[in-house]
Image (cartoon, rainbow, N blue to C red; front, side):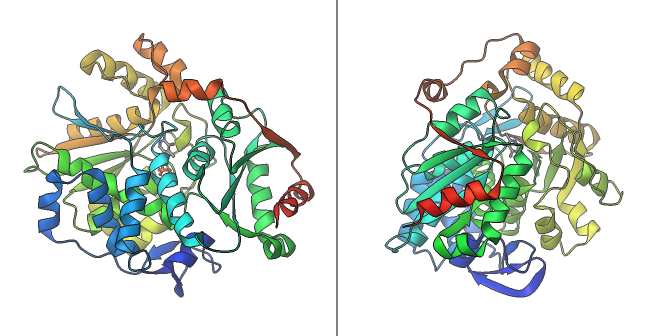
Length: 435
Ligand SMILES: *Cc1c(COP(=O)(O)O)cnc(C)c1O
């Protein structure tokens, strides 16, 4: 597959280049040149296929022939080795739980797939690939776990000292092996600036093969289309229009859904559900696209002022507001509504949701009140409620079990390299890694 840049369609790159570079040198984001429509017979066959079967069939036209079928099969089997339950709520709506991976958030899908794809591209090579990633918490954990033990790759995760949660810090600093945590005396913005400086520094680039694991890598986008098809395949009745509500921040998850729809998945509409950071819903309801400074909310993984994947959504829809409106309905909810939703999901259905999933459910509820037709509704639950114990336990009054795999992390030995928020320090560290 060839990829172009949303900023300049004449700039082209092969899959390997697009994945290892992350961002096109000319600006913009990579998009696949062609999104092939899969035959209706494929979708009809999906109820008998498992997750990895569906994933490899969808990945093939997007990533082949650069990745041979048997390699792709191995990548998806290795990456998606955890359950992806679609649960029915008593009112006939469905929730797709995407948090059963090792770090309890849906980012595991993207990170685990990307790690294996990058490993394929560097396998047998002479040089080690060094991945630099700045994190405010979740992304770094998912990336650290995704790449853990992958041969030929070293991961360096920069996190702001004292500004990630206790669980996140444990996840980041206890991985070991080929993953090193760099504890930066500064903010998340400092971490991002340091990573950027490394990519711009000619000496560092000459000495080390560097790549980033940022959220706009196409290798993270593609796997976020698979579970939409899987959810559809597990619905007991596919005769009514299917509407999927996606709690959104950077809109990578939703872009994955739109790609699945372009491949022929019969989803009639997506709901872009955000918290108070509502640049996209305001645009979708007729306003200008005017990002405002990000505000902190309960669903903090969606505290994004200017979604990085919005460019891709515009590109998929030819930049046309009416075309976007055919696929997407936007809505936003504040923290009070989110708390109330967590309570209501529990009292009405006995379902314990995290704040992100609660926003997704609210989007579906709002749509249901306004829709003039019957539909089958699905919302995505993107994080395990144990990641947000305080608010979830307060609103539901139930004690949330922290899964064993997370509890185990808390008692593992930790190691972080403490570093000043200065590029000279990062550069010295990185050059010491070069062979
Ligand atoms: C990252 C994240 C989101 C937002 O996903 P986007 O692809 O950025 O829209 C939602 N929920 C959780 C738990 C996340 O970690």
